[in-house]
Image (cartoon, rainbow, N blue to C red; front, side):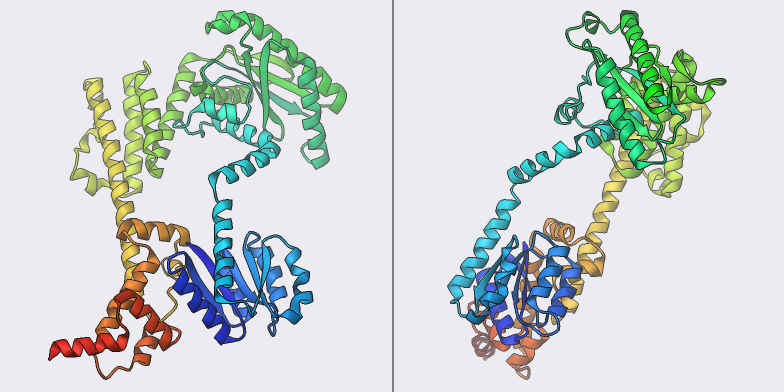
Length: 541
């Protein structure tokens, strides 16, 4: 539903346009009106509007001045100036802006309705996915290096989603690597210089590293580097598809590649020293790894860097302790499980769970780590009583659980996770339903007041668009239709009371005038309020 604001310091004009548009577009627009530019600006600061119809000459804050605020607050908002023949020169300046047009106040109703209908169609066209995607692709061309850096950094730190197709991501971001083949990591620390303190120096360094990479890279290798912070770089390295060693995943077959990478690193170090007076200290992984193990290898490279003592320069090929590597992998994955439990990411949890339970590791370490993850979560969210009613939690406290058949306790933990996710979904649904009930109660109790989507969202502190979708999902109808239905029912009840005047009922239900109420009631019920009251009186007799 689009939001339209009518602004005119003559109430009759504003009210008339409001009634005209409400009758023609009862469900297409959420209509608002303001009798001054100042009041209109208050509305605009409370939420986004799609169309604003405004008089051009108003005291205190003119239409042109309001237009400047609109351009600043909501640049995509369509503005229609209402003007007289004598004011055309005055409005000429404003209509040169995008999304701005004008209507003469003498135009007939059909012309006004046609103009607003056309603007609604234009907005719908702009919102089409194809148009948005085309613009997004243009913007992505400019931000591609940043997006590449962001995705590869997320992979390094284990933050990338496991539920997305990584091949599609790499293709979309034009990352020259294959996520289905092993990759070799090399870390480099930049030592010395003041590149980290000057913005110009940073730009020069980034440009220089690009030149160095192009000059000393190899055609048979795909090497993609990123900066993870101001003085740390990481290279992701794979053989090109045409390279014979690409066919093998055995570490021994990578010996030639490792030699080439060492030579590349030495050349890059010498070039950095000559060009920027900066030394490179490179740590080269001993062998390639699968992409799902990237975060573990990166953690070990960082750990190894801090373990290095003495003069840090040159290229060092790292040999990892297998026990330490296995422990690092397990800790990181169990930490991820805890994070996914807390944030309700069931699919991501399932993906990491399958990797953990598929690895040949010591059962004691897995059991203990998982127990800690679940105990922390249960304590943090106070779930002990609710979970105890569904499952036996004593297994979490018993070290003897490691004596169980592995398949049994693995199944126990997985079912426990499913139960936790079910409770989360139940809680979310209950919170949503309570909020919608609050909105419905507010509507019933404030029928004569502001019931705009903006106001209702302020009452429950939700985003207006989210509230609109949630209301439709829970009730099966949209907010405006529910308000109309509620007002109609209340009007019928009030018409049973002969001492209440029509204008009193109209005011109590928030209609701008008795004629407006009459039109609404007749359209909804098929009778005028007077006829309906008379009909009810005859039925009583």
